[in-house]
Image (cartoon, rainbow, N blue to C red):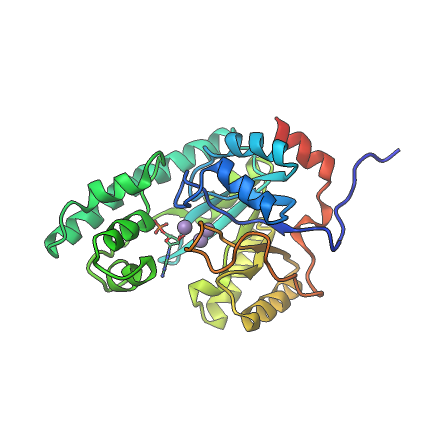
Length: 298
Ligand code: AMP
Ligand code: MN
Ligand code: MN
Ligand code: MN
């Protein structure tokens, strides 16, 4: 008898495959994130912290208590043709050495970048930002721009995190530092080598023209990428339609994720994502719940 239950479209399915905890730049600890997901009716959640997998074991523990299926995830920072892209790994094995070591290297690189950001801000007359960002990062093993943004907002340099980004942390602004992350092919290799699937996060955010977008997607497919986020808090409904079509045309799976970072900092709360357009093949369409649970309990 087949014990594996293939996940099908169901009104009961509340799935979110992109979220952050305090292990990267989210505001809730992995346990609190899972508790919040449960309170919002989410039954399948991927924790996808930036460049770190250290939250997965705590999340898995809480997921069991909350009766949520946890998908082991990560969001890897990548440089492709001088642009930063985010590649989500789903159903990864966090213990796969090339993945774990590769992420550690990215985190080391982040530390250098944080020093460079602080040095730039220093020149601009804003002092103590490295210590400030580090304090915001708390137990996280990495420092991100969000930690700088929260520190600068707390010091009154702008009214909120979003405005700090606009004023200080994006290209052309005083605290911006260009950085080279890992390559697209390496990120995909780590993910696939660990048994996972690679997904391009929030593709509309990169503002690639049609040509570059086509090039990215064909390269991504050739390298063994599996899917793209079609539903994302970064996408308008028009962009969701556009990427749904593109996904079906390129034979890519579609994913959906809120990119939840915590109360007050996210456009979509957990459990409130619109459905994938009907032409999409969901990335979970061939996942077997019992396989996922086995992995989650590992
Ligand atoms: P980093 O990987 O350290 O460069 O930081 C990227 C993170 O910064 C993203 O994952 C978001 O959480 C946050 N972020 C990027 N751009 C913005 C923005 N314009 N407003 C608010 N948060 C942003
Ligand atoms: Mn983030
Ligand atoms: Mn991202
Ligand atoms: Mn994210």
